[in-house]
Length: 208
Image (cartoon, rainbow, N blue to C red; front, side, top):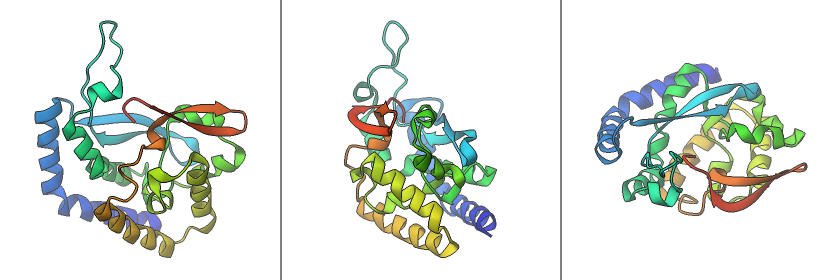
């Protein structure tokens, strides 16, 4: 039933939001050039790697050695605005239709983090990753890594269609209020790993 609902909701969302999808595509093309999409490998269910799709929010600027410039030199005011509205996440509806993701589930993190998760944190991969989840409606970027992962595992332990509907409703409220969006995004930050798990640092991770 969850998969059926994912397909129905993603299809309806793409149809209803198609004018916005096309408008954002045009603005990304005009402000950042081609390509309009950004693909990044992330771990999905059972830690299987898939390519997550986003609208680009950064320039492809590099230094003389071909290395990407720091985030603050590549992100534009348009990119900031795109992220603040979460519209850069819209193409993940395609991931949902493909079966890589669900509408609701733990947000997929960087694949490089996998080997540093504790067994408790790895339980987040018992279900498909989602476009939104418990962490996104309970503080989002104000939460520490440990708090986010605890909420992810809480979702795994208590998942149900009723819980999914509650999270989807709360997601709409959070997006309109922009709660937790303007805080430094630890989920997109670089991380210092230890044998006990993941710890936060304040530097950012390119293209996350």
